[in-house]
Length: 553
Ligand code: MIC
Ligand code: SF4
Image 1 (spheres, helix red, strand yellow):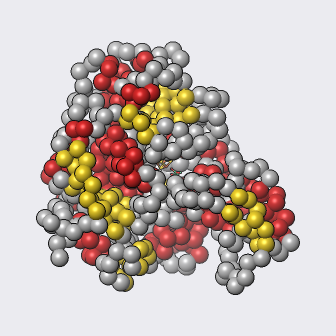
Image 2 (cartoon, rainbow, N blue to C red):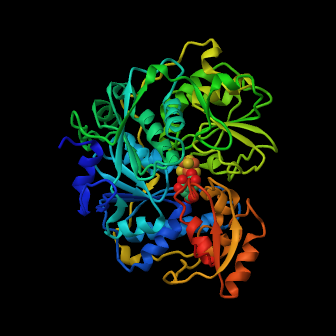
Image 3 (spheres, rainbow, N blue to C red):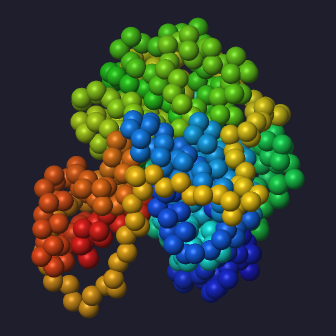
């Protein structure tokens, strides 16, 4: 049978079962990544497994989420992560080196390999031809110690790209088009595999923007072929030796084929409060805007920020708009600096944030009450920005930059400017000094455990009968952000007992007290939910914290 890319890579990694969509398979994981907000729990679980070091080809621990350091908690956790990485044979990407997905794409992603990450946007590396999957910390811990990853063998849907994007229309608009087509529900257990002639018109970072936002559709992952463009990207990263050609066989079989004509895509925007609430930017033109945030793992590459800089060059941001730009990695920041583009951003009046998740996870740059915030990130769930009444719209960097100048939602094609076509550099300036190598004498490394670190919670088997209370009834589309908020609460990630106090904080402030009362009376707590409960992130705290509060169903 003619094979898809997904089938080829998975079959090379299957250790149990066979490629039969819907059936359970177990695959070998070549690489893992963790980030700090899910990482501390993943490493506590790894420690509990009692092995001396990790067994993967490569494991990287990134510090990119909890970087605010308001209080001792973040910094203490980082010291724990640094010591454990050093002892267990894991690379550590230090605070300031960038967002895990951007850095992994630049420095470590390899076509044809499998990557498991404790973050839902791990599929970003699908842009380089990997099968990259987001999972809970415990799954990643198991993979690190050499265990396989179990999943339902996916149904493969081909997204056939034809034509070429017109000026001012971007990969982000394609990602939003995919969301408009497939929505945020009903895609679990599928892989989006990209093919067609349009693929060769997209650079690796553009492909990565598209695979990144497949996470919002709920798919297992998204993947692009690895071709000449991929080879050039790896060459520019000084990693030509990591290239491998991967493409689907002609006439490979797919569960479904959906065609997207790139030349027909227009600038799009995801309106509050769901990434699939997509409209053309034109329909919202003229809407007053209070904040513009450019960055996140979706849109913070060299190409993204160089384009924004070219648009803002010689302009000033509108006086009613607060503009924040967070480069995706130190490499991006350093390269735009060397190209002189940072000066253009600063002199336009943009605030430069550190290379981290920052505004995207709502731990900083929260908008004003009722404000309209235009962002290049991937999620706009109510309250995720840190302000419950804010309205967040997701757009491309081009639309964001145009809006920053005019102060109103603007279709960038109306700026009257020639589209600034940014070439990918033949060679990036590369400096890996913020990536720490593990110790050569791990037996001498002492693990630092700050007071923020709690015990990983344990559980007993699910009882035969559940008898208890409906502790809360919630609506459809309750995301992990609604279940357990990140933002300023995220610093308690390493301590389930403390973090659990904020379960359903945004839905019903009385939930915690009620759940604890029932639990302590020996009753089981039940959550009654609607469609798509638990969509969004891979944060296992959305399961661990309710579990700690005695939720059984
Ligand atoms: C997110 O974008 O929601 C996060 C924060 O990156 C999460 C991980 C987490 O909650 O730590 C994700 O996407 O998995
Ligand atoms: Fe970080 Fe936002 Fe990407 Fe999550 S979606 S990894 S918070 S940048």
